[in-house]
Image (cartoon, rainbow, N blue to C red; front, side, top):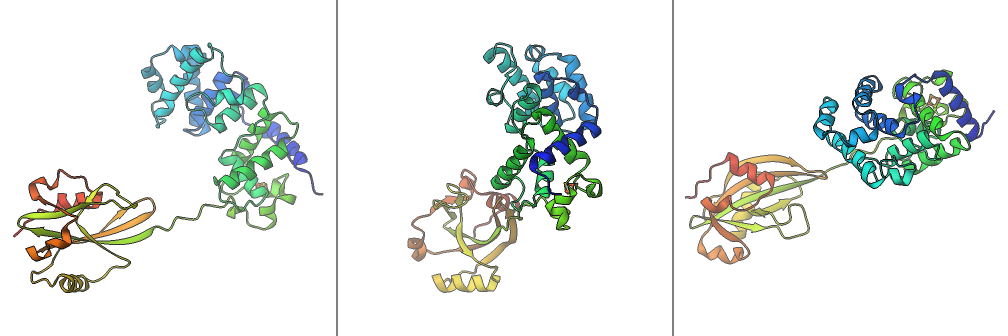
Length: 355
Ligand code: SF4
């Protein structure tokens, strides 16, 4: 029999009351302690997080104790969790509560968002659990459960997926207690609708879970497609004249704007050394030999893969007109300019000799 979203929400809550783990932050409605637990759990698993939580609560029983503490003590207690800016933010946020909220922990979603280090997820968790505000949390567990239940095609963490997951969660929440419901969704994702081997055979939602009915549970949530990086091939030619090397600043709207480089010949694919030499000899009617100093090396950027190789060639005065836009600098002054990493690496590895 098909059940409405709110029926599913009720089933989920029943499941939670029966299966939930007994955790110290579940025994309290104190927003300060819930906040501590949420920040700690963003860094570690429940089991390890519990020890940290207890240490923090013992050292700083309330938000004022935390605000009045030495930040170094906070960092010390945080030791081992990593990402130390979270610990500093805890201390800063406690001081915000002291100063901006006169020592009273903010009691609604919008005010909670004003605290340092508190984003939509944490604000929704605290406001729903401590104050019963109608907010839903969207974390990895919730995304997994809702994406599987509704076979959401949008890749996880995309704007569209977040909107759909949030809407699905709100539909199930209905008039249920928001704090318990949020914890139920997270606990269900952690213990039942798990990343690997979810317990579909004994799931209250299996007869209308779309991914299960499609036999594609492990395909959800959809992953973001791996970004295909654009490949570019940079032939740098170190052109020198009378003991000086031609460099120019990159001015176009492209990577490395404002940095300097040698003469650049960009290609769509790797050409052979002989092909490149031939094209330069023809272009400039060169009598001097072009020499390859360093073969292809890769620099990986977020969206591009840059292959660079370096040649050197001496020119005569008749070609200077072609280099009006370049600066001719001595080897000694070369390092006074800023370069992309690939060129810096090249300069570090190679001693240039200009004959
Ligand atoms: S049937 Fe399986 S995939 Fe669907 S909600 Fe239940 S545990 Fe998750």
